[in-house]
Length: 182
Ligand SMILES: [Zn+2]
Image (cartoon, rainbow, N blue to C red; front, side, top):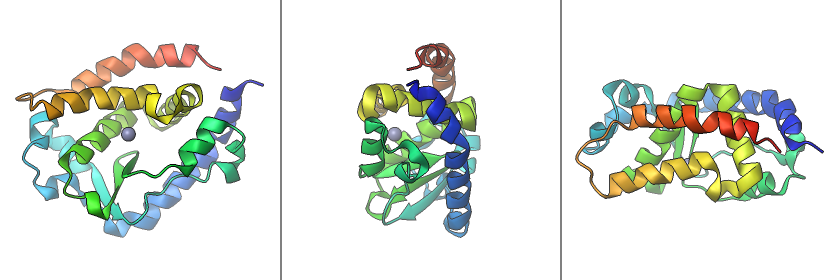
């Protein structure tokens, strides 16, 4: 059975779940710029730091993929069952309360914000989903990309235009991921 069509079929359900989840937390959102981190502005524009929103939670919300009929796909089931410090949906990310002062985690989720923005909702979900199906969460291409930029952040590279770099890289790798459908 082709797995990508199954994922494609379920994307409207995932989008609906995301919309409901964001709506439910709307009152608690704050822009990342409000947290006044000192290093994030070296890598991200004011536009992104003002438009990206954070919600602190006790448990990071993950779509109920099994209920949506995707539970038979092992890598997606593992993803659903994982414990995460943070997750990003469109222009908002959810972080565990204990992790709010961890600037690296904010940096991580902001790379995802750029990925969502550049790809758009449908293409992000398909690319992220296919990446997990093929490689598992840790080795999925959009997570591998984020970890590469984390290295730059950890090395305290003086300043770097992450946004532009992520966009260029997505233009290069995403058509390849889409061609490589299961
Ligand atoms: Zn991530």
